[in-house]
Length: 151
Image (tube, rainbow, N blue to C red):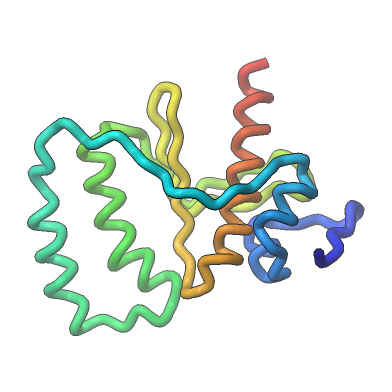
């Protein structure tokens, strides 16, 4: 594992840049990491906007470059997030800054919160492994932040 300097300040995106394995970062902060299939319960309500979302994305894709994280976030992820808010009535926070410690700080691309549930979306390029490392840092920070709020 690449060394993390306990005296150094890190942002979530810095963990992505360091190319630390997701499992190693989780262990560093005292957590575990397991890859497994996630089975979510089906959504019971009418998905009344899915067809329009699909059509909008298919219409713009031939005319849009997705070479940057910002482009993917604005053209693909943002419309999906707005529909997710429509369906869940969750509060959405974009580029939400959080700081738990000098090693767990940064901005969450998308943070959805509803009563006792949260969802974090991190827009990444092709590198999903190290994107997962960044997401792990964000989730650990959120858990610690939530615990501090509840005390």
